[in-house]
Length: 373
Image 1 (cartoon, rainbow, N blue to C red):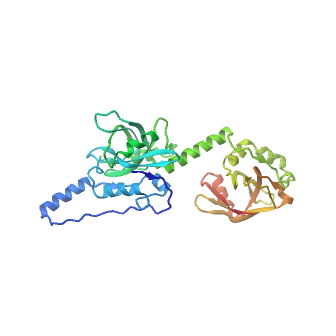
Image 2: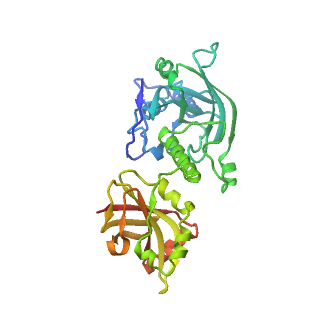
Image 3: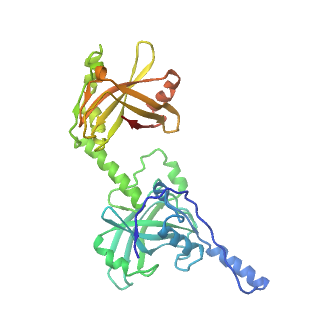
């Protein structure tokens, strides 16, 4: 059985189940049964990467399968008492010509675990040579914490050549074994807070939802391309309004590859994009202006055009909201197709503190073009 990777916006909420009994046990049986249930009760939880991908048991068939198995007290889904164990769900996802087996990891120890590292093998039987052997990493930022008596999904990238092998297994049929388990307890991870959290350490296969994994990998590749200068060739156009500025020479000196390459790398084919440089200047009247780069890859030269933009901080505080920029031919000339142009945008005095908060590193910028014409 195979599930295709989809992106769905939904509230990540899990529904619990309950049991029905046809006969009424006596009090001793009730007490014994309650004790057994208390010992073996396992809860199903999402990864942090599931929340990033906006998938849950409500909108994802594989997560619903895992949740239902755990909620129903499926013996295989419960794992082994006192151990961390893993089983194959019988399903896999495909994304960007890559294949991800979906597993269920269960913690039946008395410790909560995060930043897990372990070797996982998968074979047809205990006597067969494993056809999958991976060193897996589940980091605190992207995976979260595997609480005691909890079960969570794990996604393992595999060779597409294994599609036929995976198709032959249903839930829990393959032999999956863990070894060389290393982990931190949540309080240890909190003590180390502030250190760079690398969700993809060298030598390990990440166990996150494919949408998260691919998103991070694309971002890392983009950053590397920008650093290496492997970006689209765009023509830098200095508009008349900057050419005629008394500080024109200083502004041009700022426009090096270090400033331009991110705008080029983040530009989008057949679209106009906006990139904030972080450069901010104080005008003679004491007001602040900040430098953006506008890129044009629409396939058409732009003259006498306008765009509407939003500029917020990561906390949702607005700096500019539905702010219109006018690019008259007199002040800005022509922005050719495959070109980029610097533009200083004045910041309202009552919003300057929000911009300063970003410049001081207390928040991240969030900006976009709403429309252009």
